[in-house]
Amino acid sequence: MITVDRQRPIAVTAAAALQAVTAVPFVLGTVVVLGYGASAQAAAEAEMTRQGLPPSLLVEHGIAFGSNTAELPFAIAIVVVLAALAVFNLRGSRAARTASWVVHPVLLVAGTLIIPGQVFTTWYLSTAFAADPALSRIDAAALVDAAAAAMPGWLLYANIAKLVLTTVGSMAVVALLALPSARAHFRVARR
Image (tube, rainbow, N blue to C red; front, side, top):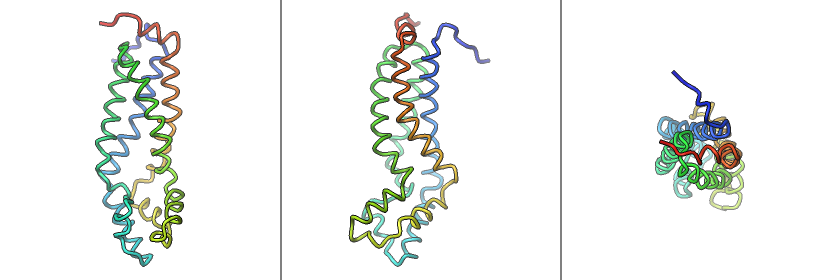
């Protein structure tokens, strides 16, 4: 049975809920990479062949459509850290509050620099391809469409949620944990 802690401020509960919800798109992304990444990469390589270009150009230029499992440990670590912070913030841990103030600005920066490439992939690739003579003949839109067809239809929405939660959500967590009611919650000795 779920009980409501009448002593816990709404700001702390909201911050912890945001932390937990922010972990969800990272879990979904991990599922997509493991379940669909190889198919998406194969579809992109087939599209390269259809365009009369060697599929090896993708690998040579570090272009992967969900098949790069090297990033999975980072996504899993983010999920674990966010879940732990949510739990320990609810329990009133001062260390978790402080760690939240460190982790969320890092997520904000990462969300601003990395995640837009997952949401605006066609634009990013078109821009990069135009600047590189070896890649300028690639139809980026067709390439992204081919890879996206091998992915679940909800992936774009999960990536948009990840972008919003790591940026705006991170700012909200920091602000919520700085409110006077939250400060009082973390001053109380916890067992």
